[in-house]
Image (cartoon, rainbow, N blue to C red; front, side, top):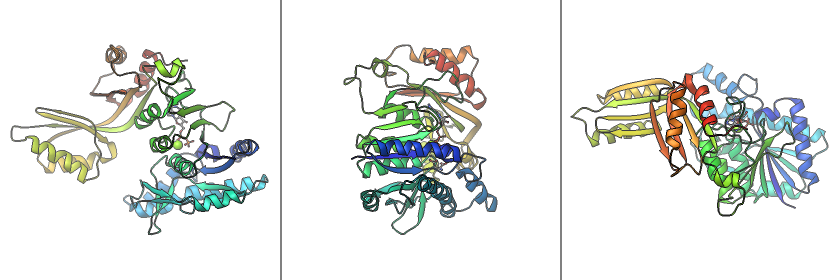
Length: 406
Ligand code: ADP
Ligand code: ASP
Ligand code: MG
């Protein structure tokens, strides 16, 4: 009898009706002779009373720059409330459920508050509970340090909890239940014609997630991939089969949809600032080094980096723009900061070496009069920086251009 990890996201546990559907999904696993381990997110989304964003707002109302350690204490509450409510619901349905915090489930992290890394998972307590026939309901998104400090794993981190537990328990399968029928060619909230991908490789979905598709956390995919545990992303609210994420590759599949596609999907990341620095004669490679080092020393991660003779361009998260600009001005840099930008990407394992992909990309944007501020490409993606106001039209145009609609 194998173990299955079933993770339920915020919308899946937000209402009593949704929680009844969760009970049904867990009963299906039990009836299939699987031993379920449940992971839950905080209840609801932004604006709802027990959601993670609500706790962030509450803490920041007290002090905008509240310390990351204290923020993690309040963030803990969201998943705690959710896990207690879900455990009660399962008990009421006759299932022998028991609630555990991330730490009680054996998740040990570093002390990087708000974005901690899992160092190890000690599954012994979970294994004992499973042996006793219990159904553990674990708070997602949480860990504990070796000094008993509470930590959280970064936004969307309940997926990571599910993957880490699945890996430590050698689960047969990890199911990620959410409010869409699977991983789609674009966020269905942006492109109404986006279609479900039946099957996708770990690599492809990692790329999509890193480039902004929030449907699954990339760290969760990386953890599952290390042990080759299949992941399925599916809806709590339907009986659709969802998207299967495995290591299936071009060589070992006859599924031409997976094998031949140039583009897998279109993604975007908003709230980006572009930094342009004009280099004067007096500035040289050492100055460039100092610029990037100062960003690193200030914990500012940079993306879309272009270094030319005379100019350096890169992007950062918009909320760090003031800090970065002030730091660079201290160096005497001639800095130009553009706010309200977004990065839009076409992702696909088959993009590399296919002639005309860049031409199609640019054509789709030009036809729609979308100015390009910067571009970057890799062997699995092409990305552009544009003004945020053009995201909807850019994603829709690229989705169409790359024949991704259903
Ligand atoms: P959960 O709370 O269940 O973890 P999330 O909000 O984290 O849910 O992720 C689900 C959401 O991800 C969907 O509602 C959808 O709008 C969004 N999303 C973004 N990109 C994609 C994509 N490529 N495929 C499916 N959903 C996507
Ligand atoms: N509740 C956390 C968040 O909103 C973790 C998660 O939902 O995965 O980011
Ligand atoms: Mg999520």
